[in-house]
Image (cartoon, rainbow, N blue to C red; front, side):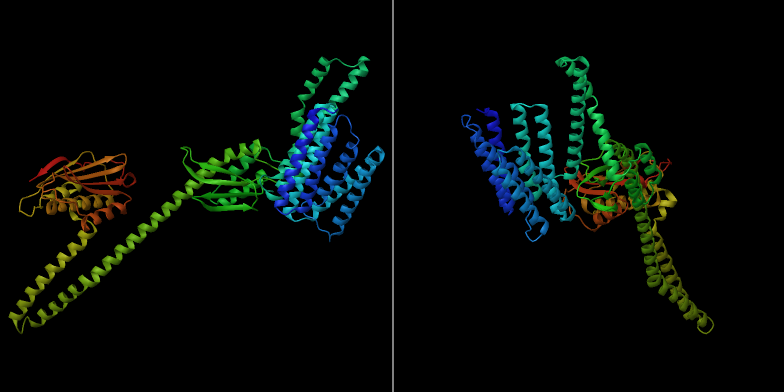
Length: 599
């Protein structure tokens, strides 16, 4: 009677094949599905025959039918059968005939071995031909089949060789369970992982394992010849342990050889990093090409704010995303690199090079962003200057132009009348003086609109105090204003004007609408920039209503990139504004004059 573990392993294998057949049947791969379903059924029959009290007469025919006929037919019609293709038709006929002969002559070992060799050679030849002529998707499916069938069969053979007993057979049968799932993945989810990378790793591992077993068998045979008897278990263990130290180096060497054959020589990581660092500049496209050439990568792309900034090479299915961050860990973009065919990830050398390069790319992106912001700032400044010029031109043309023209005409009229009619000339001169005074007043208004003269004459704090001294409430009482501004730095012109306008507008609102007779102004320079606060004692505590004045103050703060908040509290109305630190110079001056009170 065959051991129960073998029968159980056969049942599990049959279940895996049948389940995979059902899954393939659901995705309309009827021919391959039928083969797997029949193989699963025959596997169950084989398990029952092996456990049938030692009566194993049906074992050989069933095993031959599964191994020589059913499974090979399922393989040759996978992923789809094309009966109009002569190569496919011949392969099906050859496999079917050889499998049938092998099944009928199951008790004759030479015939079975010959038919088995014919089936294997036909299946391998067909697989090779299809890999060369199939569509990309079918080629991926065939690669999955080659991985599952070839890898499992070879590994099962190695296990059976290393452990020629019941448990070796159980492990071998368990390894064959991956064939059905691989066939399903190849049809339904072929891109779940780069199967070429799995093939490379499996080939490298199996080759290294075969080399290790061959070396161990050779050493064991040599020790037996040398000692004239079979070596002891301890000596074999020591020999196996010593040889095992060479297993990983052998895998690394084999992987290097495969990489050399597939992709050419890989550069030295430090040399590649130096080459990349030497070519990083303002053009990200040049940097990406340098990275690709240095690391032999098929694709590289640079993203910032979710938008592609530059790319190089051809897109690949499998990529790796690297975050580009500044030294303070602020992310500024992403570097997307395509994996080489056959790679499941980036190697340690590639990771090392990219770890050196990504900070440089992050700094490059940061520099580009700053340059872009500077350009936008310059454009905004030029736009503001041109708008101001347009306003001045319009005011001069529509206001001062006619006024000065009228003065000129009136001067001519007075000149023509001075001898004939002195009285008329005298009236004209009086009108001329009135018009001239009006022109001077309009010129002052134009100058004040650009920059209040008091800022240049008195400074920011005294100009605010002067304007505050002229404010009265609706009842006629003077508004008492205290101004606190200690140790203010020297302010740029734009910041100084914005501060003046915001404070004055806030005080005007206090005088007109709050019902309060007192107000306090506080101006400080802090880490966030210039902090401005105007508050009153509440007065009638009327509901706060935002109007044109508040909108004007917000616009002035926003123009410099600052913020403004106006609200009503239990203590009264409060207007707070913050202008960014970049608008404030670091040099100190004596503009802050302490606390003053105007009545």
